[in-house]
Image: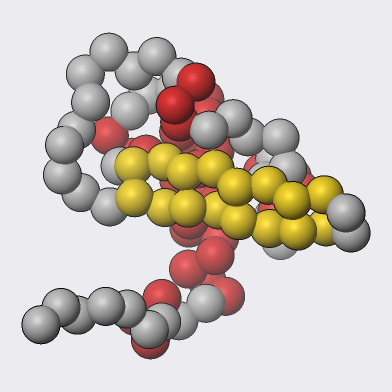
Length: 81
């Protein structure tokens, strides 16, 4: 089983520090937020599957791993209106 530490959840950079070139203006964005003892961290990636960078591949792998253990379709969301 791949673990979150193996994927590098603690040391992934935020998407803002990466230089993609062409950005996608619509799609799915993921925000990772966690607290470990006195250490807090948050970062985000939008459409990580659309880019061929080591970091975006790591984020895609993280999303796939979390989907195995989290019923993403049952998470509360704002449906508008």
